[in-house]
Image 1: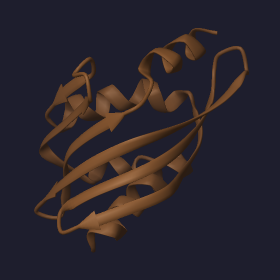
Image 2 (image 1 turned 180 degrees about the horizontal axis):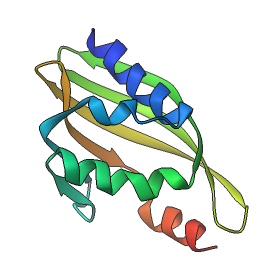
Image 3 (image 1 turned 45 degrees about the horizontal axis):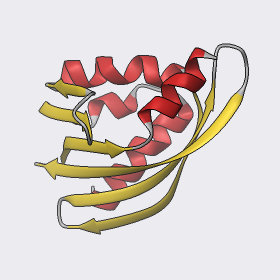
Image 4 (image 1 turned 135 degrees about the horizontal axis):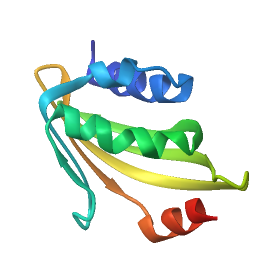
Length: 121
């Protein structure tokens, strides 16, 4: 699978709300935001950090993707629904590193405070 196809498969799985995205991570995967407020190491920890987030995601759309070898930068549009049913859209920059055909590292750049405030309702 090409780098582009792997990343597309990941986001398509998120949009379908199935578990295929979990299979795409390396065992030693790392996930963080730019400030390191969010930080998970190891496949199980990365998956567990995403499950609560995905409960509030209604739709995912890749708006732009740049790939170079095993490096990817994607601009991803997330449509969220909070517990009160309100909706919000947020564009997020996501920087990926692949290793051995799997997702090895993800760093996200987004407004964490706005997201958390919205999800609190």
